[in-house]
Image (cartoon, rainbow, N blue to C red; front, top):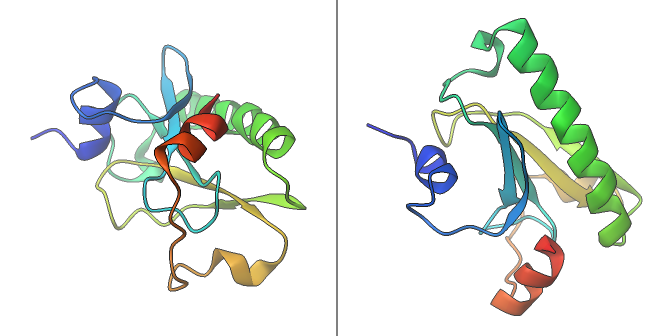
Length: 124
């Protein structure tokens, strides 16, 4: 059965796409810690990040770097945090989170609520 991320990549579930290439897809988290919280995933459905082959792993992080640079230019923040947990969806993914301090990447923090217009504005 396809993961929710595969359904997003295939267009079966709508998303606020940030970037895409032949191997990766980046989109806004719909339950973000901060405005601009982005998920970067390989199109190849692999559960565990370290199960990716070296080429796919390196490409995923190179793609994430490009997204992070563009995200930092769009969202006011001191840094873009990079977090890999991988428990919530069985599809390797990287969280890119705009932050001003370390406490902002605590996943037990309340999530922010953004309007569709705010999400679209960030995604562009």
